[in-house]
Length: 158
Ligand SMILES: Cc1cc2nc3c(=O)[nH]c(=O)nc-3n(C[C@H](O)[C@H](O)[C@H](O)COP(=O)(O)O)c2cc1C
Image 1 (cartoon, rainbow, N blue to C red):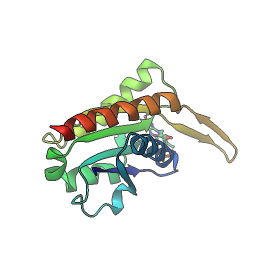
Image 2: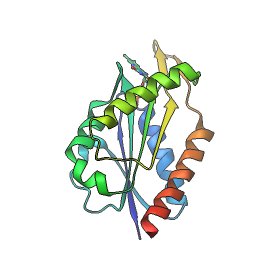
Image 3: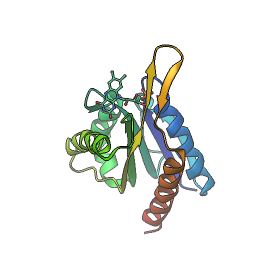
Image 4: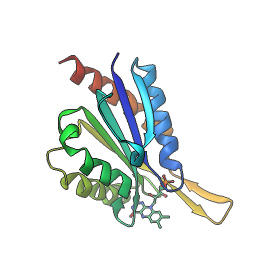
């Protein structure tokens, strides 16, 4: 059976929760799925495909995600890969565009790596201890994960 690695880079956990949901959907589509923090990924030998998710901070993709892209660029260039980034506090077009440019910059640093799907999802903004603004759209996340499962399946059948 094909095993997919879902790796994530988070500071406060919202990206991990999205990664867990993406993993669930891909598992439901019939894949074996492992989930791991990006910085703990030592080897990709066991995996036939990878999904990488990272939070955006200060205009950049989380360092652990950028590092994984660099460390494993050779393998990621030939494995089916999907990448998502989390950040904007709303899904207004302008906010999404800014976040998309931040993700593009991280991907442009490893030009041989060509994801078959990318996405930007709204993030979680905390205000003090109790208040949070959660712009995550779980339906959009699930729809993307289904599309990714489909694309990974098609790539692996080739
Ligand atoms: C200090 C700080 C800087 C941020 N910078 C950006 C940014 O440049 N672009 C963006 O889209 N989101 C930015 N965000 C929003 C985060 O990406 C969002 O809160 C995300 O859900 C955090 O993910 P995590 O919970 O996995 O760490 C920032 C958030 C904080 C607290």
